[in-house]
Amino acid sequence: MLTGWLDVQRATVRLKCEGLTDEQAQLVLLPSSPRMTVKTLIAHLRNVEQGWFEASFLGARELAAKDPFELPQPPDASLDELLDEYDKQCARSREIVAAHDLDELEAWAPEGLDVVSLRWIITHLLEETARHLGHLDALRELTDGTTGY
Image 1 (cartoon, rainbow, N blue to C red):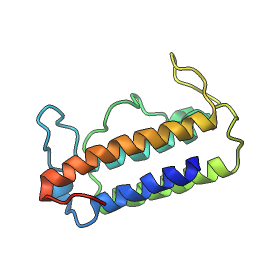
Image 2: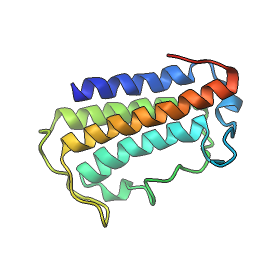
Image 3: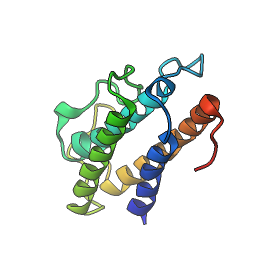
Image 4: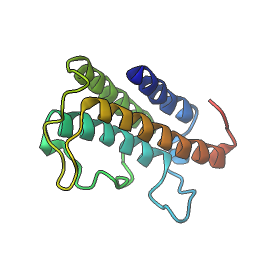
């Protein structure tokens, strides 16, 4: 059930971006959040998938972002490239989940954070992806008036 709902959220990310141009995807629409664009959110979601499943859970610390809580700098890649990278990272995350028990603990946690289970990571990714879909909802509506799925 957890992975099913996470996959629904992941698929909705691409739906939210359907029909946007690269120019629209890099519009800064929230003056108080100049790094929050459609493109930076997609890059962030990709980094979050890699950070939790590969860096933390598998222990590939070299893949850990300097600050996983910050949005990345605006990416040079096109929106389509970013979405493809996100899809590839989600596929990698699915492979990792399929090969492990949900109660297995991550191999590494950044300083100051508790070690958590794969079940916790999946639940957190479900919450984080859904939260950022809300941001994508707002950005999309502000860009061209598109609402809903």
